[in-house]
Length: 415
Image (tube, rainbow, N blue to C red; front, side, top):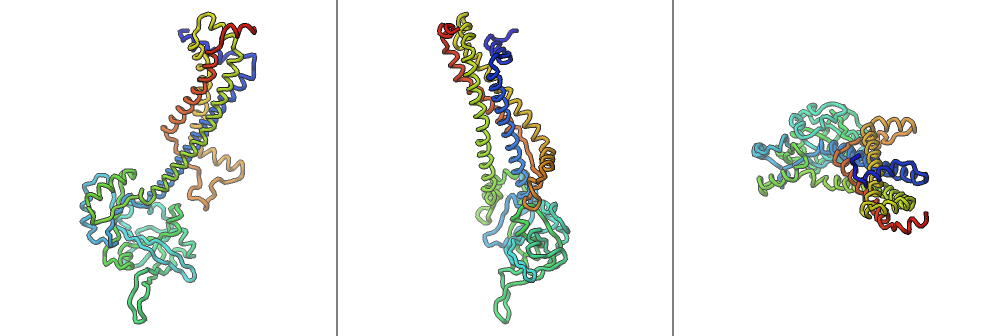
């Protein structure tokens, strides 16, 4: 074999049958401990990526990537504004909207809600709410007929079903002989939607934009313009560009301003979980250290003989570093293979465990997701594998240095 002497001896020590079975047992424990840490990191980070991806998809499928509104909350020249944005290649969808707060009541049931006035023909360009309709469709909203689409949670709290009517009470007032009175209007429930986000399902309702403009006294105007981008992560950059384009005449906002802290919290939680689970890898690294220290003590005579025939202390170091690194590489590969396998088939494994233990991890009705999602990213797998290898390699330094300091005369005097 044309292997370097240090590599040859290190590999031979690794696969040789030892008289001291305790060392072999410690080596296996170190290997499996490292593999367990790598597997846990890959599975947990992938599942957290999956939850983040699903939440982003649910939330950002219905909210605006970028919005443009006027300071007085009544945008009337939206047609010219929309045409002026046609040169921006990042914008792939545009739609006007009205947004206001109102009270909805049905006999003794009363609830506050965010009322969104939309154009049913254009709404599909900027949101995915039409994919979340559980009854009816957005095109059932006809101007002048005062139809309303409720979130499923809001419909339950108001105790209404499609076909029933609810009364909308707005902050605007009308002048009557008895004085100023709140503006009221009966709306017929023509549809229901369920996004899976509590904030929207229990506190949102949708009506036609023309009905909304009349109800909230906008005189034919709208609250603003909603924009959908090719890449929602580019929203801050597009917002900055639009602010320069429209100057101070309009307010420009994007989803990162409203929901950025929410996703930053998820990212911080993922980072914290990564650090906590990395302790498993650290414990396995300590096992590698103890295993090699015991092995160095067991191989004192061999080290002395190798030094006697001319092997340098540096070469002795490399022998034991090779041995510890082999344990680390095997443990990393074991964890990598099992982690990737579990993550790839988590949609099969989790239901099987739920059936075996007669339980449900994500009970329907309590969570917006009923299945454990997974999104394994290549960068995370590479990062975890490199971390595991580096930790196992660093763990070999102390035992290897201790082996290099062995004095042949003292070691052989006890043989």
